[in-house]
Length: 206
Ligand code: HEM
Image 1: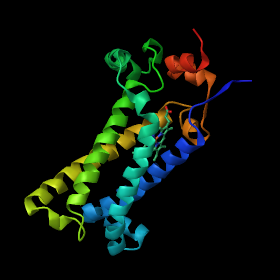
Image 2: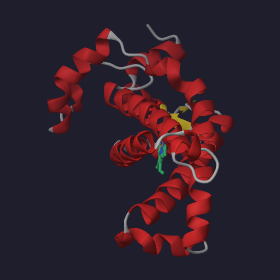
Image 3: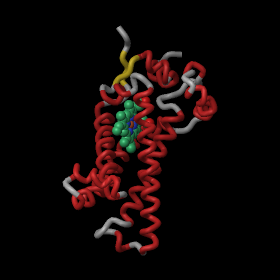
Image 4: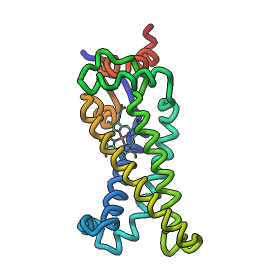
């Protein structure tokens, strides 16, 4: 029988899916108030007023959820010398030639870049969001600061949405990854194939 390895405990998976759900809610409410062409999303949240009221709360909860997730995975997302070698070989991976790639730890360089983009964009969204949150905080900031905050908020949201699209695409593309976050386990074959250094570390294999 194929050997099964734990990749995420229950608390990490619960945390991850809560952040994913809050991302969808914050994203759809945000898009609805960003442009009239996407206003129809507001129908999912009880109309325009509710969408506008709920959006910052979804956002704050998403950021808080991400802080807990961050604390659990940031160490495995540190950049190493092997990651730079992996990036240089990345064009081969895109051609479907995974065998020639250098071995990686728990996450590959692509996952690490996406992880730090999540972190940076969420910090920017959080800080700038407060600066124009009416009626609570916006009045503490001069209008020019609020205008710049709105612009940075929109850019950070675009970066976050694109990063999540890459994250989900990669999770589906690398067969066997989604079950890491649904069941919490992966097969030994998957671990050896995609994260050999991580597999060796947890199994004690030389
Ligand atoms: C909505 C659909 C989403 C799906 C299907 C999804 C899927 C996955 C899967 C399969 C993994 C495990 C990858 C592995 O262990 O190699 C993972 C890890 C992770 N996901 Fe998601 N995810 C989603 C949304 C999000 C969102 C919105 C965020 C944060 C903004 C997020 C943050 C993370 C983080 C931090 C990890 C840990 C791995 C790492 O540091 O790269 N995910 N996700």
